[in-house]
Image (cartoon, rainbow, N blue to C red):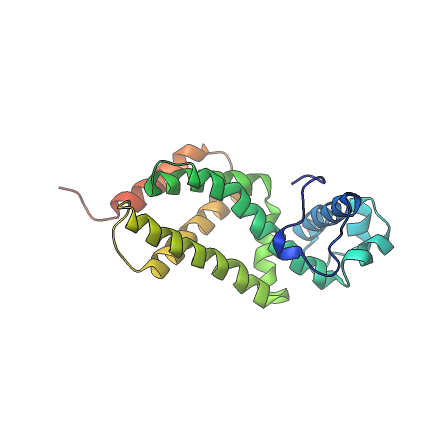
Length: 208
C-alpha cells in the first residue's frame, strides 16, 4: 500500500485520523512498522526506528498509537486486510469457484513475494498478541467457508464440511506461500497455482 491509501476498517479507533494528512501519516507509520518488525522482529524493533523510517517525529507516532504492542496489533489487522483486498477481487472476477481457487492462489503468492515480512509478522503475533493471531485466521476461515457453501449453492463445487475444507485449503496456501513466496520466488506463479489447482479439483485418488 502507498501512503495515500486509507487505514483499514480494522484500524478505526478513537485515534483514527480525520484528515487526509493524518491518514497519510498513519499509513507511513504502518508501512514503516512492517519494515521494522519484518526485519528485526517485534522484540528487537523500536518505536524510534519506526518513526525514523516513516519520517515522522516520535510524538507523531504517539498521536496514533500508545505503545509498540498497539502498532504491532494494528499492523497484523492491516496486513490481513491487505491480503484480502489483493486476493478477493481477483477471485470474484473468476468465472467459477474452481477457477477462483487457482487465480486466488496466484494472487496470494504475488502478494507474499512483494510483502515477505508478512509471515514473520503474522507468526510472531502468535506470541505477542495471540488473540490477534487467532482473529486473523478465524475471520479468513469463516469467510472462506461461507463462500464455499455459496459456491455449492451455485453448483460449482461438491457438498462437504465447509469448515474443514476452508481450513485445509488455507493451510495449503499458507505453506505454499512460505515455500514459493518467501523462501523461493523463482518458479512462475501460474505453474504453482496450476499444480495446487489440480489437487483441489482432482484430489489424490488415481483416475481410471
